[in-house]
Amino acid sequence: MSDSSTVLKYTPAEMMIVVAARALAGVRTVFVGVGLPNIACNVARYTVAPDLELIYESGVYGAQPARQPLSIGDPTLVTGAISVTSMADLFGLYLQGGLVETALLGGAQIDRYGNLNTTVIGNYDNPKVRLPGSGGACEIAINAQRVFIIMHLKKRAFVEQLDFLTTPGHFHGGTSAQELGIASKGPQLMITDKALFDFENAEREMQLISLYPGVTLDDVVVEIGWQVRVAETLSETAPPTTDEIALVRGRLSSGKQSGGTGEA
Image (cartoon, rainbow, N blue to C red; front, side, top):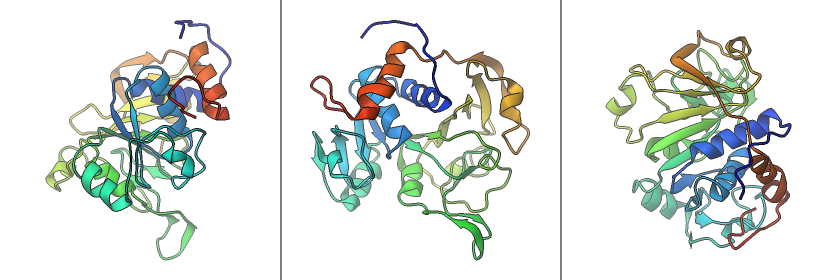
């Protein structure tokens, strides 16, 4: 693969995928779902994390799907897998055993401490929208060594107060999650389609660390339901390269295989 830095036109979603892939540099094990996180993981395997092992909630470890999976129950996830086991064994032996280095999660709502809601919008007993619920997200978040969150930056999603706490992040901030016995280090990165955030402060509060090309601070602030914390050094994220965009649009998104690894 060349080191070309020529920039193509790209969408915000493609930028988000590329940033997520770069964040996986050197990672060995990642718990991942379908959709954008799955594409990001496969981009990482071709670029910054060639030894990355993909783990799926359905019981597949080390998957090399022949195409983009439609769900976590898609039979294509078995392709080239190191191990296929029950969900109970995957969660009990791999996840709770501390063998998952990084997890990629998303949600319908997130607050300043990285807590997630995937249960309801509105009142729990009479919600505006009833969402799929936790699935394995809560267990993944509290047992994976660290968590990366990937979501589109929208004010309806970045809220001061969650309608329901489905998955704990840094809970009330500071050391409150550890005081509850949560083993995970919690959310480390918040990857969006406009900017990148981390939680590297004593309060474990989401803070803006990098703007994507062409995005202003005002563009970010207007989409967040609380006063945005900005890191002392605010950088600009490098745009995708032609190689990264080609991976996202080509053999990964289209389901074509290349080489001996067989990723979608």
